[in-house]
Amino acid sequence: MTLGARVRQCRLALSWSQADLANRIGVKQQSIDQLESGKVSRPRYIVELAESLNVPMDWLRHGKGQVHLSRPTGGRADASPAWAFEPDMETVSGQGGDKAFFELDGQAFALVPVYDARASAGPGALNTDTPQPLYHNVFRQDWLKSLTASNPDNLAVMRVAGDSMWDTLQDGDFILVDRAVRQCSRDGLYVIRYQDGDELMVKRLIRQPSSKLLIVKSDNPNYPSQMSLQDGDLQVEGRVIWLSRSIG
Image 1: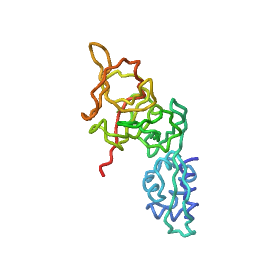
Image 2: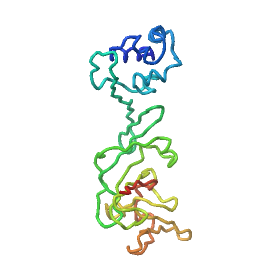
Image 3: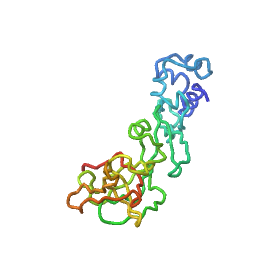
Image 4: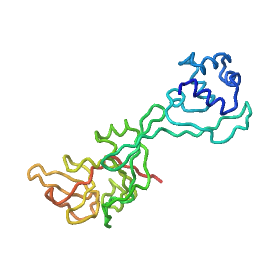
């Protein structure tokens, strides 16, 4: 569908004549006729068109997504347009299951799953067998790329429980986990579980330069002292690359 055809689709759905639309954006009726007939493909008044029709610029210019009237206009020439917009969704298969990607207003977004299994930063065991995500959080893809080179398929959001990492992480914080990271290549916060258990924990891992052992540390000094372990004693489920916190 051409730009002119999209304009005509909206105009007819709103029961506007070519003259009605032309008057709204300050051009002659012939300009709308030439646009809809395909004689003009790049009108200088495209911003005014999008604003008058109240549709996203990306849809009007490139046909990305779908629009439809969310309520009838009653056939009045001066009726205010009310549209519902649905972005194009591309489902792809990745390591963590099916993920959705879409574009809106010229920007690319990724939907990152939020799981109900919480990473435990304190007492309490949570099974690592995660069901379908409860919902997805939306992140700009360029912003995600500024955090990690990993594909968005490998990212997940989890909720922290407990206070063993206070005050780096607090109970109820949401953390973004890069699940492509399966070993401690540099010091930082990781989601781990011990080989003899299924409890997910967020801990600080520090590599000892001399022995190459891993120091597993709680940031809260009220918790037991750190442990030095071999890599085989624990399994890294991902690296924490970002956190979200409510400030009440």
